[in-house]
Amino acid sequence: MTVVEEHGTAEAGPSGTGGANRAPRQRRAVRDPHGPVGPLGRTVRLVLLVLVSVVFLYPFVWLLSASFKPVQEVFDNALIPHTFQPGNYADIWDAFPLLTWLWNSTVITLAAAVAVTASSGLVAFGFAYFRFPGRNALFGLVIATMMLPATVLMVPQYLIWDWLRLSSSQLPLWAPNLFGSAFYIFLLRQFFLGLPRELFDAARVDGAGHWALYWRIAAPLCKPALLVTFVFEIQAAWTDLVRPLIYLRDPDLYTVPRGLKAVLDQFGEGGEWRWEIVATASVVVTLPMILVFFFCQRHFTEGIATQGRKG
Image (cartoon, rainbow, N blue to C red; front, side, top):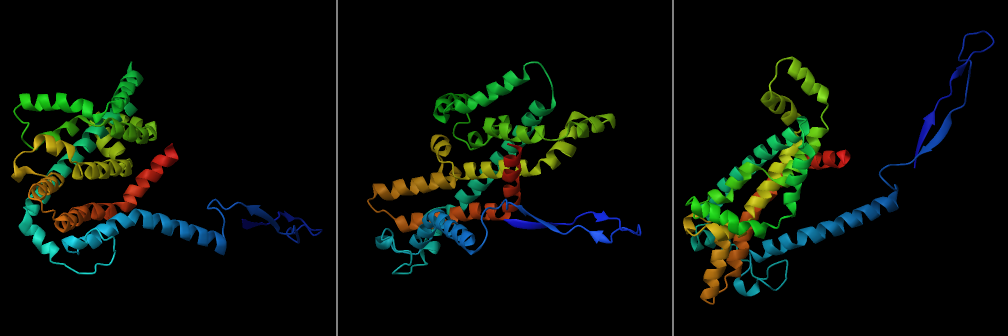
């Protein structure tokens, strides 16, 4: 509980000067919005944070430890390697073309993130700004597509790309994002609905067109939401394995997840499971995601918090 002091109002004295007699200070209790305070409350919070952090960090710490072990010690569950083998990080570059796969993943991931952020932002702004008959029904139809399992769309999408003779290229991995995503459209529309319409009306009076309304007003004010969309799609595209398994057949076009799957298949067929190489490569390909979330953490948290307040 927080105690707040309040001053009474001044009362005029006999001489009329005022302020000679003042009401005594009053104290009132205000509930702390952040929960219990004091040593016990802070200790409970700290213990909970440490426990949750350990649960989330343990898999990556285990993977990092396994990347420094020889193959016979990978699964001994020791977080400190008995035999320290840093040469694994040099061997992965000779074991397979990891640099090429990293480049392919980077290009595809950026293309997918930019495409879905741009397209979903425009569609969401259209649903938020324009008033037209059937708008709510059409938006409900877009949201309803989220209930379709991704596996239902795999065969029709493959037949379309095969008809276009592009089923063995990297284009199917990011080009569908040019048509937006129902989840991102819903997320961004909620932000756009929170913008004062007077801003757009004033810009229209000044002669701004619809594109200017989006690019100069809506997009800058909703930058945290657009960044959340961008980061979400980066994570989804970077770790995607299903679509590369369907479309990529040339090893020179492999993404990192598809390449690691090929490495596992190759070692499995020969009876030699090089788990230390796979663990080391997994650490290398996880580091870019950690850096993305590290540098975008402030904007990412701001976007999530703003969406929570709007809800």
